[in-house]
Image 1: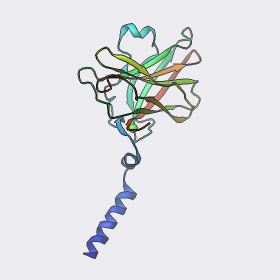
Image 2: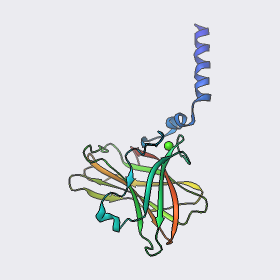
Image 3: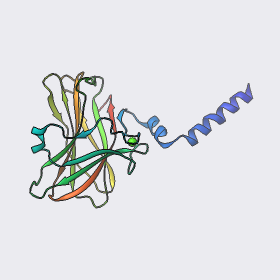
Image 4: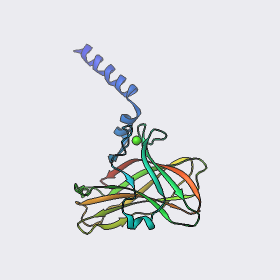
Length: 197
Ligand SMILES: [Ca+2]
């Protein structure tokens, strides 16, 4: 019996020490992770802006792809490539994931968070999360956050008071430039839902 306990303790110790980073971080997280981009080549349904009409307002996202260049959790993230035109000062880019056809129920949650990485030397960029809910696709966006270059930053969206949260039809990651004219890659990772603010 004592031997069994010893073996079990050693096994648990080994697990704690040798657990891969991603799994260890899962244990520490307080939220429910909904996007992590850990599978090579899998953007998890995310894309650059899809609606032709909205492209006038959000013209800068060129490509969106899973990447192993930078990660906040695990080894992968979503690489969002942006190309800003000098003539479109303060316009924004938008990456998105549609749940249309299979809406998500987020009614148990109060906050949505995501981490984004700006490369060292990145121009000043501002990030914002947004969602659409219900049959009339009601738009709700969060507070815009100034990103710090060379660091992971957090952006969040307060879900309390959002109507039709049991029917989330889309989620958006918005990038806005305060300076015109640049080519840049921004990394998005660790998108989580939280039960408290
Ligand atoms: Ca990840």
